[in-house]
Length: 122
Image 1 (spheres, rainbow, N blue to C red):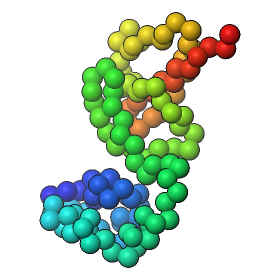
Image 2: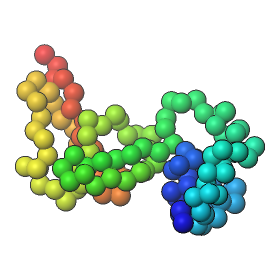
Image 3: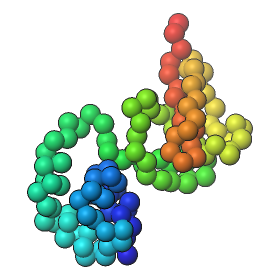
Image 4: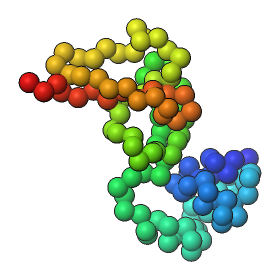
């Protein structure tokens, strides 16, 4: 059985939309395949309305331990160089390259810190 959240990720729709349109809390792989192969009108319309500027879901993978999760991106999230679990020590995280500066963003997904490395101004 597949959870509603996993179905929303597979269908690339927000969890709220899945709930609103009656996707059950648990569904079988066959039911999910049916939704993907023969999408209802609301799903077709949702896909047609996408601008493609921002993804519905992003997949976050810790650069240190490999822990992964799917999360809804926030408007304020920049393009991360990488993310890592907040409990890792700084020494476990890849260092910043010479000539670059680093910014850290906490509160990414359920447990991540996002890293953005950009060239330093000369």
